[in-house]
Image 1 (cartoon, rainbow over the protein chains, first blue to last red):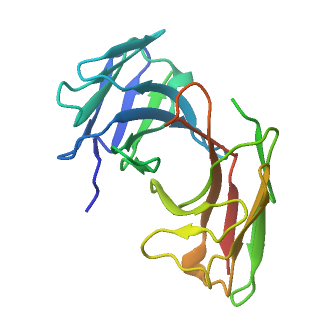
Image 2 (tube, rainbow over the protein chains, first blue to last red):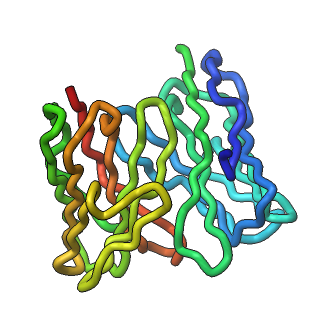
Length: 111
Length: 115
């Protein structure tokens, strides 16, 4: 059983479309991180959210941490082919340094 | 953020053999981790590499299969022992650091194929 469930698992969209990726859990996290991984590379940290209800923006990417700190979402506006990759959420539970990774969302943006 | 390199970047090995993967960081870090990423899957933590003491393994991973060394604050190795095709995965090291205490930064990974 995955502690952090991501949906959808796979998303194929046309360039210019918007999309949202969800990361859900029944557990509370002290912080949650989003990574993007491209083939042949390690995950690259995009953002960390720590406060319930927090919203962070990174250019066309908007990240939100749920009020109860159990879930998060990533919204991409006007997706571009360069956004293609595996998106991973990862949470840290209180009193722990360990990252618990979500199941991942594989995004393909077609030109 | 720290710059992390791994060697080798990829390898093809025969079953029954062992492979040692190296992880080098360009600055001293307190905590280093080893992850496995099976084909098409997410990341699973194997162990925390502790400097000067034995690594701390996660459930399902044992020292005999995945011995880890951490001789100093910039270097660690992971050995995959007595390999089988089920060990075919990407192995990644990461370090704790950066702006936030919880943030981890990853190496490029080692793609291992066992035939």
